[in-house]
Each structure stands twice: as C-alpha cells, then as structure tokens.
Length: 458
Image 1 (cartoon, one colour):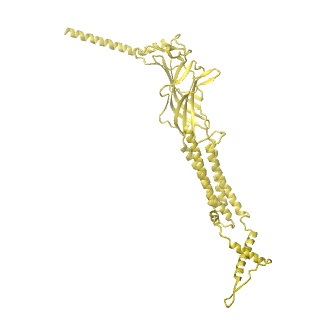
Image 2 (image 1 turned 120 degrees about the vertical axis):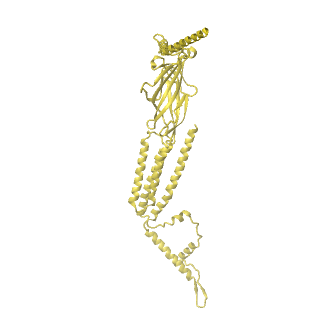
Image 3 (image 1 turned 180 degrees about the vertical axis):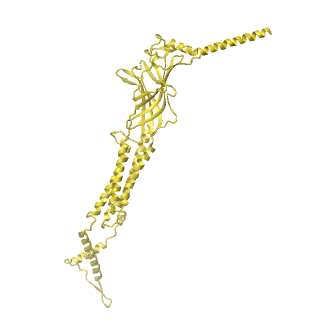
C-alpha cells in the first residue's frame, strides 16, 4: 500500500508540473513572438533597402509570385474608355534573412502591419489612372512572415484603369480590358514577377455588371524593354461581352417604331396636308433626338460604328417619308395631273376616225330589195385622205393583242386623271418602303452578327 501511495503522489506532482509549464508557455507565447520579431528585424540585423537573394541563396533575381482576387467591377465607361475594379492584391517571395525558429510548430507565422519594416517589390500598375487604399476601420493590409523566410503581402485596393476600346461593332461588340503590373526600377536581372501556380486570379461569385458580362479572363506576361533594361511585367486580360438586350429595348425597337409610324403618312389622304406634315416633322425630330442622345454617350471616334449605320438608315427612311409627301403634294398641284388639251383633242379625233371607219365598213355591203348584193369597187384613190385613214384604222384593229403586264395592270387601276399620279406615288411607297427596310434589316443583322462570331473565334 505504501508503494502505491508513493506512485500516485509522484504522478500527481508530475501532472502539476506539466500543467504549470503549459500555462507558462501560453502566457509567454506572445512575448516569444515579440522576441522573434526583435531578433530578425532588430536594428543592425535587417536592412530593408537590400533585395533578397535568388533561389537557394544565389545571386540570381528575386522571384515574386503574384495572385489577385477580384472583389467587384464597378463601372465600365465607354466615353472615357476606362473601368474601375476593387481587388485584393497579393505578393509572395522568400527572404532567407527572415528565417526563425517556430518553437516546435507553435509560431505558424508572424504578422506585420508596417510594410516599410521589410523589403518590398517596387510593383506598379502601368495602365492605372487613379487608385487608393482602404483604411476603414484599420488599413486593409498585412504582412505575414513564415518560419522558412517566406513573406506574404496582401492589400485591398481600388483602381481605375485605362481600357482602349474598339467600338466598330457597338453595341454588338466584345471588349478586352487589361490589368498590367510591372517593376518600376528593378530589371529582370534583379527582380522577376511570376504568376502563382494553380489559380493566379480568382473572381468573386455572382459578379454583377450593369451592361456587360465577364466571359473569361486570361493571364499572360508582358515584359518590356527600354533604354535602361528589361523589366518584368504581368497582365490579366478581362473579356467583357456587352449585354445586347438593353440596347434592343432602348434603341433598336424605338427606332423601328419611329420608322413604321412615318409610313402612316402614305395611308392618309393627300389633301390632309397638316396631318401629314406634322407626322413627318415629328418623327424626323424624334429620330434626330434619339440619334444625338446615342452619340452623347459615346466617344467621338473617327470610324463608323454599327449603331451609326442603324440610326443613319432609320433617319434616312423617316426623311424619305417626309420627302415623299412633298412629291405627292407637288404632283397633285402641278400640270402633270391637269388635263392636257392637246392630248384630249388627238384622242377625240382618233375616236371620230374609228367611228368613220365603222361606217365605211358598213357601206361596203349594200343590199337591194331582191336580196342581191352590189359590190362596190375597192379602189383606193390617191387623193382620198379619208380612204387612207380608213385603211390605217383597219390595219390597227387587225394587229395581234399584246401580252398584259402585271405591273401595268396593277397601276391601270389608277387612271391618269386629276390627282391619280399622286395616288400612285402613295401606293408605290406603301410597298417599296417596307420592302427596302426589311432588306436592310436582313443585310444589317447578317453582317454584324457574322462579324461578331468571327471575333469570338479569335
């Protein structure tokens, strides 16, 4: 029994000692972290002005790996040719001077909030217009130092970047906006940027853009050579597709409606001058306002855009409808539709001659009371103009009939009397304008949709 009590007493004492040591370790853990930071970053021990060595401590360039997390894309401006993005930017490199003892795995990493305490790559965004850090509530930045000397730098920033656009297919276009990162002072002999292996760029789920869709993104390298040397550069290309439904509702359908409304003038009576003039002028001014509003939201480029072709043709159709009424009104008031006295006299003479020829034919056969036929000699006297005219009329009536023409038959429903030619212009316009506009739509959509598919293949 004494031996058993002695054993339990020793076990209890050992447990108390281990618990005391564990409590001391927990209490002194942050103090140990402070000592480690003072040890590796103390005065005279680390110089942030000197870049880290290359791989395995060689004199080669320092390797910095980059990865991005795109949090949001706020705006994409066509008129300024720029876009705004908010992202988390991360850099990771190895600095062997920052190695430390992890105390048997208890110190996973050290955290800093002051970037000037360690060496930092001189990276800048080459196509940046504006940018700022986020300091609410605290600066959104941290530096983690791992036991093997690896350094992770992370910061949240908002950038406004230039995005040169080609608007020839607008609004059926796709745009590529780039994000370029390069070294400002260190050449490739001292500093090289590489994309992080695996997944270098992440994009937040359910990214919502008002008039665009992010189809895909590609990472690439864009090293540049200048008079002072070659500098490392990375870029990510964001491919945006413009949402066409917005422009279909706001531009294309209203323009089609305006063109169709302008055709109502063809169905109004030619005497309704105020109605037809008001309709034509109103649609023309509305179409011009629509065109100016579209151009106000776009930059003044030197080439023709797809929307320019559409609005230009629609404006031409509306203007043509107004000119058509001017032609109709002129035709109804001009001498073209008034009776031509000379032509009427000629027609009257021809009718008299036809009647005379019929009478002459009846005189050729003369019967007496005994039903005997008296044949008159068919002798043509040269001095008899009436006989010559009769013979000419007979020859005309003996000519074979011509094949009827469909167009002339349709147009013959509107005889050439007072105001009939003006009516013909209206009837022809009712058919011609819609057919030509439908043909234009076929050519327009076939051309630009086919070009859009070609651009997508590249």
